Length: 226
Image 1: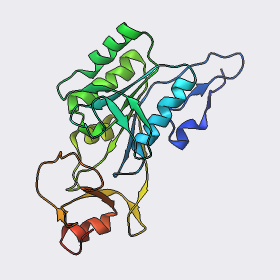
Image 2 (image 1 turned 180 degrees about the vertical axis):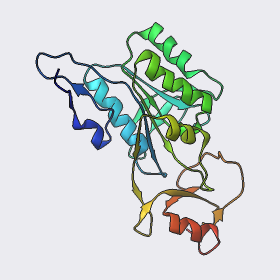
Image 3 (image 1 turned 120 degrees about the horizontal axis):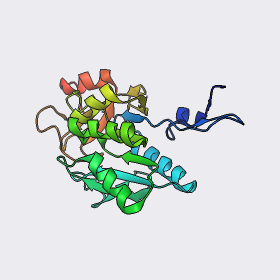
Image 4 (image 1 turned 90 degrees about the vertical axis):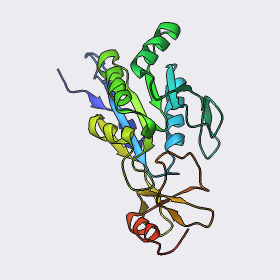
């Protein structure tokens, strides 16, 4: 049997790769767990919504999951900075995501892809459950989130996605210095870095700024402000 040809869609960050068999061979799709990570304001949610639209355009059904603690755009809504938005299924920190997906299928039928916004807020157990969605149900899962918090430390969800995802892809953005931004600074009302406090504090551009590692060191050490 000839090898399948890989579609270039994944390389552009628009969704999982599809495997198209040559004429006379069997067509198959390999389900995987994908983690798209970045600093803030890199376009993670925009990419998620574009990928979901691509599925819908082809007559496929998807579900978008979003954590209950993120209510910046209203309950049950995922929205991007450029104005794109879609309805989403909210989940709590103790909810079983495999059971959630199975219930969705029982209620609505075939499901072609699961999207997760703000995936850094997943728990260890929930990342494992998403891997079960892939391995048991053979449904691709695309998770989008921050890699590190304002202290430069991994979020729980991001850490286990980095460990267990089949595919990792960085979505890049730019620091004010012109270098690639890889870290996030939490700032106060005067633009000074905040280095203490709870890991999770929901906010936008008024509270968080994406910077390079070099700028992160300067700002968190009190050498300037944003």
